[in-house]
Amino acid sequence: MKLFLIIVSLFTLTSSQAQDADTQTILFFGDSITAGLGVDKSQAFPALIQQKIDSAGFNYEAVNAGLSGETSAGGLRRIEWVLQREIDVMVLELGGNDGLRGIDLSDTKSNLQQLINKVETKYPDVQIILAGMQVPPNLGQEYTRQFEIMYPELAEENELPLIPMIMDKIGGSEDLMQGDGIHPTPEGHQVIAETVWEKLEPMLDK
Image (tube, one colour):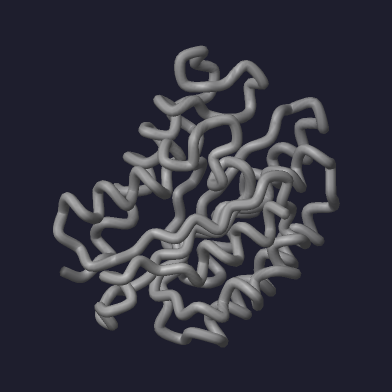
C-alpha cells in the first residue's frame, strides 16, 4: 500500500505544475529517513527543501520517493518505476538498512552502482547527490569502517557530489532524534534539510 501511494504521488501534479512545462524535478530517493517515518510528511526534509526552493524562487518540484525499510536491493528493483517521471536532480539516500541488517557491503555497493547507472542511462543530464550514512559499531569495527568509506568511493568513482553523513549533525541529540535512536524528529529533519540544501542549492538554476 505504501509503495502504491508513493507511485501515485510521483505522477500527481497540481494544476499549476502541470501547466508549467519548465518546472524541473528533484527526486529524493531513499528509505525511512527520506520518507519521514514517525513525523508528518510535511515535516520530512524533502518537504522542507521544497519550502526553501519556493522561498529562493527556484522552479523545481521536490518529490519524496522515500520508502520505510528500503534496502539498496529494494531501491534497485523499484527505480525503473520511479523513473517513468522525468527527473533533473536526484538525492540518493540508501544503504542504511543494509548496514543494520549486516548485508555484505560488496552487494550494497553493487546495488547502488547499478542504481546510479540506471538513472544516468535514462536521463544523461541528471545531477545526482549521494548521501552517506553510518551504522552502529555492533557489527564490528571493520564492517563499520568499510561501510563509511563505501560512499566516498562511490562518489569518487562516479564523480558525484557527496554528503558524507546526512545525519551527522543530529546523532545523539534527544531533541533531534526520536526515541528509537534512528529516526529524526521534526527538528532533526530541519537540520538535515539545512545539510542537504548546502549541497543542493548551488546546483539549481533560476
